[in-house]
Image 1: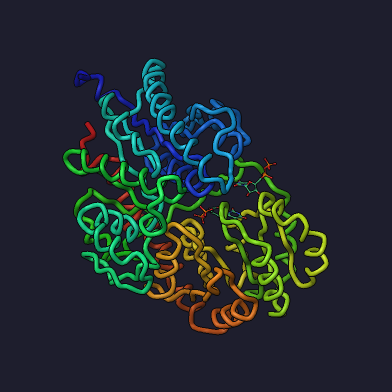
Image 2: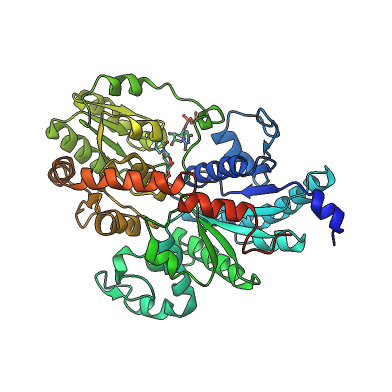
Length: 469
Ligand code: UDP
Ligand code: UDP
């Protein structure tokens, strides 16, 4: 129990915890920076695994940023190497077992160490895949909040799935077009549900491992009293009906959480030659292509992609990650010869690219970060969802906001060159661009002073509707 005087003197101190993936670390760090901006007296300790830290940050662990309010302190996942990106499910499952056990212990020690240093944590904020974070916080008398980094629609789907609707999904698992009706959501085809609830029941499988972790997370949310607080990386304007129906939680939409201007200084830098290349291109002429930080392209997919892009006659900037290129090693010399009208890079600063006036559309795998960054930039999309929440995200893009179109893939999952060309022309010439400009304005308003997301973030920082104080 803290005395009244001690509680008064407590400086708000958020411990932001995240799984060591690009798509989790980036939005978590962006939230950390927004918290610092919203509460000028607040401190943030930002923590991911040691390997995640090494991979993402140029800063040494423990080195505080300039004004000392943000500190990067990794936690241990009990392994030397961290999460090795591999398609091998067994190694992923082993990793997750270690991650959960060692992570919970290490984060507990971190909370204790910060208190001992006179920097007690007043709120733990954690992303998905850390189902133990709320318990670790509660054991130390610290309130917590889940930071949901997928759409509110996916949060709602999981909520209903784990509260009475699993049977209907299981029953129709093999009928992709079957429409599942969940409260507060438009009917969803089985094929568009998050892949973790539909793609596997095999305990040795990657999907199943993520499924179990997600189920544990929703069980942990149910243990919270009064209601679990969830801050969601979306905004009122983008997902109004879904958010209104999320009464089971104290949910606050605070997004899209975008990088602050100086984010880049923390991250490893790339040589940004592609920016000069973009500078030389006419407005809205370039097709930008990326499947995010995880999805791997098969050689056949890369062949079709490059063929389609070359045949489109439009300039293109295409990301093929180094770890994906390794798999395509044999194709590489040949690949270079085929690139006539575009530029292929291993990585780029995507937010800067999307904001560049030369970019006319984005061929995307629809990771939620990519979708939000694109909506905020007013760029129309060609959706090629791969897994996880991406099919749902593509559905929002195409049917809810009408800022893009979903490309059809063959039964082998490969997007063919002709279909790519057709879809690129559709969004480059159609209404999507005008609609996208409207959403860009709506999102900017939500984030601006007094906008819906700004209002909710301030409420969260001040602890309204929570058990802080
Ligand atoms: N990468 C990432 N986030 C970043 C930079 C890179 O996820 O901020 C990914 C990207 O897929 C890239 C891979 O990590 O292809 C390797 O990146 P990098 O060349 O920076 O690291 P290295 O392989 O030299 O450790
Ligand atoms: N990203 C980037 N450069 C690239 C590819 C991706 O900066 O070449 C960033 C992108 O801006 C986004 C994140 O990596 O913030 C990917 O997250 P997302 O949720 O879109 O997909 P995931 O990688 O988790 O599948």
